[in-house]
Length: 113
Length: 111
Image (cartoon, rainbow over all chains, first blue to last red; front, side, top):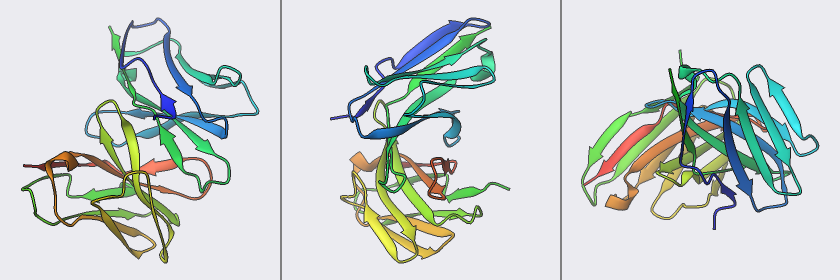
C-alpha cells in the first residue's frame, strides 16, 4: 500500500495562473517532506521542502503547505510558467530512518502559454 | 560536469541476460541509492548503501544485486533480466541530511 499518494496524475494550467499540486500520506512518522521536479530524460531535482514542525515554506514562486492533521501537503506555483511543465514528485522521510525517502506516483503539470 | 552520472543511459537487452548499471558521483557523499521508476508508482527504492562496507535492501530488491566499489561508485546488477524489470533506473546520493541528488537515469528495456 502506497504511503505517499498523488491522486492527480496530471494537471493543466494556463500560464500566469496558480498551479496546485496535492499529496496525501498515511504514515504519521513522516517528519520531513520534499518536492522534486523531473523533466523528460533527466533525473529528479530537488525543488522545496518542509519540516513537520512548520505549516508553510516559501521559496520564490513556490510554496509548500503542510496540514498534519489531514496528512496532506500541497505545492503552489504562482505564477505558473511554461518552463514549470514537468512531473512533480512528492516525497516523505521518517526521522532517524537513514534519510530514506518514500515517493508518491507523480503529477504531470502542463502549463499552457 | 554532472555531479551524479549513470551509464549506460539507454539499454535494450533480452530475457535472461546479465546486465550492470553503473553510477558515479563527485559530490563526496557517503550515501548512495538505486531507485526504479514505473508509471504511476513514482520512485521505489531497490538498494542503498551508507558507506563502502554497508549495503541494504530497499523496498523491491528481489532480482537485483549491488556493489559499492568505492565511495564514489555504486553499481546495480540484474543477474537474469526479465521483462517486468523494464523501467527507468535512477541512482542518487545524499549526505545524511534531507535532500538526495539524482543522476540522469538509465532507460532499460528487457525483451
